[in-house]
Amino acid sequence: MAIKSIQAICATSDEVKRKEIRFDSDTGLITNVGECLLNTSEVDYYYDDNFLLFAGMGDIHIHAREDITGKNNYKEDFQSACCAAINGGLVHLADMPNNPVPPIDDESYLQKMELAKKSEVPILMYAGIGPETLPLSFMVPYKVYMGPSIGDLYFKNNSELDDVLKNYRHQWVSFHCEDPEILSKHANELDHFHKRPIEAELIATDFAIYLIEKYDLKGKLCHYSAGKGLDAIRAARKKGISVSCEVTPQHLFFSEESIRLMPDSEQIKFQMNPPIRSVLDSQKLLDAIRNNEIDFLATDHAPHSPLEKAKGISGLPGLDTYAAFVTWLLLDQNISAKTLALMTTENPGIFFNQFLASLNQKTNLFKKWGNGLGFLKPGYSASFTVLNLKKSHLVTSSNIKSKAAWSPFMNIIFPGSLENVFIRGKGQR
Image 1 (tube, helix red, strand yellow):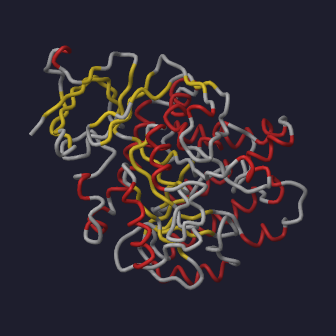
Image 2 (cartoon, rainbow, N blue to C red):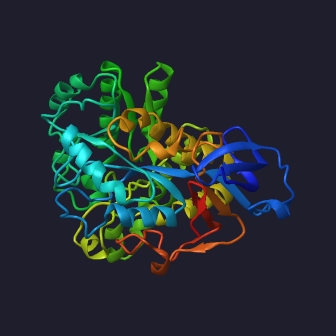
Image 3 (spheres, one colour):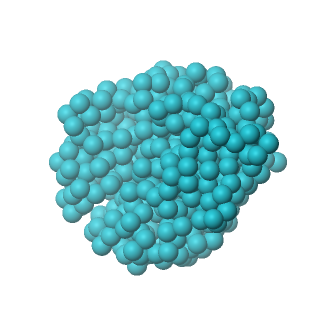
């Protein structure tokens, strides 16, 4: 064994404390986490009190765009998504299924998994649920689009969705919550905010929770934006319904009010589904984070080019700025490092790790990650995200690795920055 060591202030959901982490550089797995026994001169990587180390952060909602057709590889592929992820301090990803050829059965799912071999970070795939799909023969996460989005994998009405989900009892199902009938009713409104009103999300939330309870699903609500809808989520959890939710950086940082102050050419860049909501909504989401009621910080990374955005396509890129945005939550919004460890490392790790055994029976892609990711514990991957709390980060096109080549946070200065990211014990910066 080739044992190496790191000393740093480490953030977990239990504590923020200086620790010494030892790992085997051959296997890439943690061997010990505990008190600082080595002198600083003997440590391979030493970070003083201006830095904060997390278990490697994970983004469980991205759109890398690559599939067997290669039609959208110009937007992003698994290799470029990997580069953008590492640039943003992320060590694992989960890719959504709305591709030209969506992964909806064993064959199409494994074909897409094979494409991800080129990525240095592990990429979990969601399988798609559509009007005529059935569950795969092995355990994977699923995604259902309740209303129209990018691609053709969505439902036109709730009864159609209900009829299909009866086949997915007990599965992990993530919901894009926008009611298709409400969207159809508002399709001719003047702007995107009105075409996809908050009522569409609220009604879809209620129906998603109904389906989660009815079919005993492990449910997740994607890129949640409606502050008012949090009450329904809280009520469901009190009933023992298994429902978790994501929030995106853009829904937390921006608001409809701030976007409407921008020139029209800039406003259209912020179009996404569901839309960015009011200041009140973003504040309610931030308060829910402080109360540990939000499970995941997920980017919904959609790598459309500025030219495509100008034509009105929905979706925003977000991988490159993940870690820098976390410093905004920590330093500007006073969200605790323990809470951020839960949202960005441990919960994404739990989500990823639960599928390892099933996927290891089908592919060799995940065996090298040991017990998994997201935890500073022996047997887990020596993958870490290190933040610099004293060095700010200005977002410019020169520090974007995604093929999209832009960011909604362009020219914004975050109070901290990514210092380093380790993948299986190897520093990337």
